[in-house]
Length: 340
Image 1 (spheres, rainbow, N blue to C red):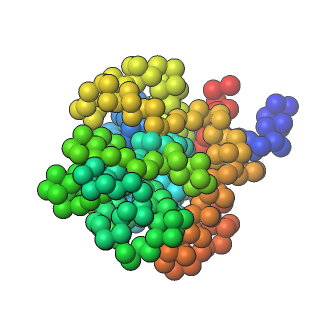
Image 2 (tube, rainbow, N blue to C red):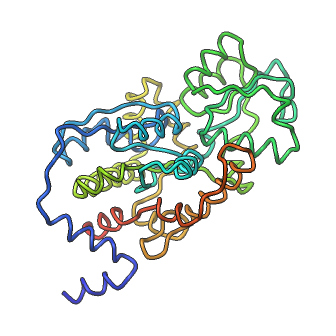
Image 3 (cartoon, rainbow, N blue to C red):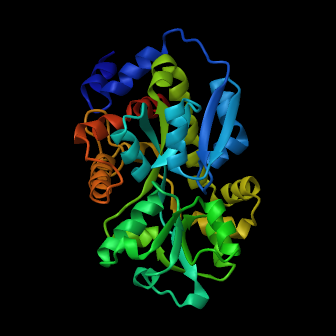
């Protein structure tokens, strides 16, 4: 009992409240819909292993999305319960009042996202994109980074034809010779590189320049309010997948290769461009933080929103408190406490 009081008074207070709520009887929905991003991360492991189906005890419908912007649309329409979004689409979603909250770090983005240009066009940097056609999913992490790099290099975006395309459509456009460059992610990125492309910028480089990007798992607020036990189990299962990735990268590569129908050697390379963050570490100051003291993701979201407002991607910068409220570590706190 004394230990419970210590937790309640400490950083994991809301986690304890969640644990208390989980003890209450709770109905289950007939079906849960999980939207997942078509990229290399540990969520593909939980999907492949059927862990969510086992843990939640409910049939799962998996829906693949090419971008966080598309996930935002699905959340707004109420067609998914869980999803995954990067910091730019999160910043946009919060500014629009989307009814969701970030509950788990799916991945930190590095070289798995890159700006690739046609080798025969001799494009060496974004300065060489003037007069060229560039594909990028609008509202995505790569869209945000492309605009940031153009601004940093004093390139007027109006001098570049920027086209809204998801990775799959960008690959098709590349093969038709309709575009000169694309800022997208794996696995489409690798296919473009192998079809006459050269990487001229990576998201890892942009992170070092002060523009970190990441993806978080989100849940609809109404679902979380009605089914907190299931949200807790979802987070625990995602944490289990991340732990699997960190402990056994070789088997993780085999599983993801099967999920994406790509050679294992390609997946092994892609894995090096993506960083998984262990559950307990996510509660630290660099990431989600705790319910009592939110972490650096709130600051990243707010600075992302400021940039997007400057670029007229959102009408105004919302109050920082809204981004603080979007990040909800309580379910992860509960999951970490349950494991101890």
